[in-house]
Image (tube, rainbow, N blue to C red; front, side, top):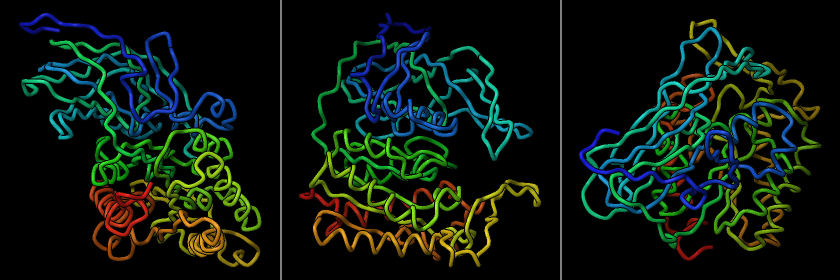
Length: 392
């Protein structure tokens, strides 16, 4: 680190982190996880194992007078065989809640996805690197470094040109959210621009994001993790992965939803709990899954491959799931006044699709993430919303 000042090296420890449920000590440093070890031992596939270790919403938080900060990390990047490598993941540095700097880390491990359907992969090891932030404002300040939301990130060391100290508790309410790849942040370009981060900033809450790409499947171990995690406000966005993975029929879906909510309520009996149905996704509205990749037009798009005629036999679509979720919440709310329902099309619907089409027919672009975050902030955290100040 070439500066005119002496530098201080601080090991990265769990008390500097927010937005995680567990940490693992590795040969290189500290790896944050978004599911606890018990849950990780029950994960049945690599897709979720990778997704939960990608630190969407995880950030380092501390106070310092430093104007230069370096963070040594070992990233694991994901590429698809036959496609160009994506841009390096972005580290967003906030000073007193405002974006002040960005950085990337080149190199690192590379996980090459060899089959888009099974998500089978090969891992190549690479070197660690450094995210460097310079020219930060003078004086004492609160610093947050949000980690890349789609890169597994092992944290090695923090170097600064002034001492750091653990940040005090913000006093803000903790919002625990579970969802699919859109909640994870797919197609967002940086970690503070994923829709849950934007909504959390609008609602002035501390985010714990359990959005897992391809893996919001009503898994009991995820429900138990949510049951046991501290939270003041809870939301679950259910449906899109159940349909596009074609993992269950209506007969299994209904009790699975009840069981998921029952488990959460064991640990949070009175916290505001918001059930969010799927956003608009035209390819899956009335056509069952599974989804399949489609490269006919030269870019990746997804198409639903199920037969709409099989809906009568219990095959699921997004429209069916919305109806069932609304019915389940209405039924349960008679005994649970803190349970609420939000139609996902109020976050992203026909008008939003016309303005911000889904580039691959499933995931929003960065402008779509902003629209979803703004709508969630208004409907959930705004006046009269289930997460409004005074609730939870």
